[in-house]
Length: 401
Length: 143
Image (cartoon, rainbow over all chains, first blue to last red; front, side, top):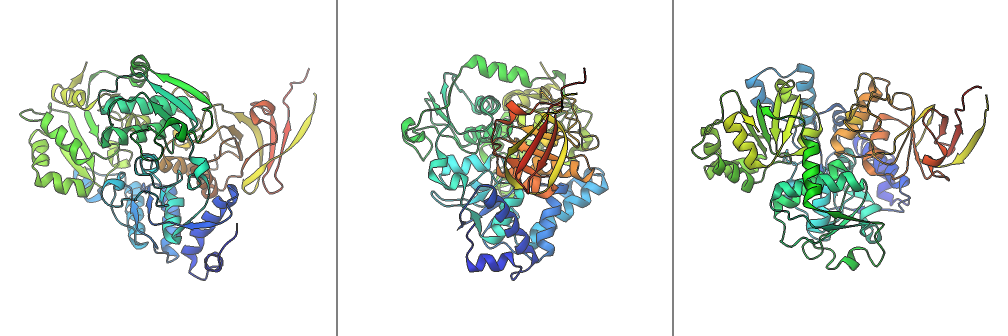
């Protein structure tokens, strides 16, 4: 890779060890992809997690004196103070989370602790080159916003935020942004849960690729797009997609494929989505908890949950959780949604991801969620997956039938 | 025992040398869905369910799952000395590169022949990422 004089200096350690470790990782990635040079980025999102692999790298940078050169937001870990009041989080894991959160502060990251920062805390613009890790963030930023990012890891995104650059490869190059698979949607796609199932199905079916979706009649909502992004990029590796007419970059199918032919064509019917849903079901009957907000709930989703819980009570023995960002919760409090949820017996928790040790009290319990991603990580004994309305109904009844 | 070896060129992504018995997965892999204390794959419905990744030369099409867990998964395996001794992939992606850099597992791609054609589970495989070579010895049993 051809490095500028400043980049060479970073690599030689003249800007400190932290910056040096950061650019070393970027150079390794650039070499793997035969990138010729680095390009400047405007912002980054590091999918921090409070886990050991995360801790190792962020402390390496923080202890080496690195500071983010461009705005760099962070993913949820968990609200340590809040959960420690509830019960004892295993001490080693709590220490890891604490150290991770402190280290991100030391490198000067935006402490958004949100997995959808592209809606409020760190918003890319069309055409910006950025480095956004996190499963929903990468495809959302590429496809819905039309900025360019690769499917970054937390560490490569943080390194890019520290250096202010990323190697020029992959989705930063137009010809690599072309569609690979044509998806003909015959399913009705009634609501955001159908988009969840669509994402789950497509990711699993195509693995690594850039799907181009046709046959979608109605403009998908923000939440539907978030769900589609999160699930397709979890059950598979889908860093970008097109819905010509609704996403920004290609107005036609031909443009999305850049004149090439799709390598495959897949038809998605309601029956496929039903089968996808059936495959996710491993339990029914009595539930112990409901876990929503994977990805973090938007203000609109918190409002929907609050409305569904009006004049209702969560069943005794069932815990009801919504994970969201501090930004969203502040607004939801002002608007009365948090009170409504708490009055029904639920909780809205900030800075927290569903995949964290703070939930270990539910290890042997049966839960319910609207997110296959939440079920996928197998932190719980069993997880029923269904839409928000079903989740609320089951929380009130204490069981899912 | 028939002892045939073939040597193939490849492209280095993460340097180093590793050898072991091949474990071939036609499905993408998420390292988080392995048991960090044994190396055994525990992903439901995965073709490697119940198989042990530890110290194998793992051949697979690509990584998958959220960036957060992929790196943590491989890092934890590596810290228990249960990571694959080398990895051969078809579709490279950033998350997998970072995972391998942080866990210090040699990683190569661009084999001169389709790895799924020339490598089978159980073959003896040596990966020299520095030299850019993969050596495959077939596992034809003694007759």
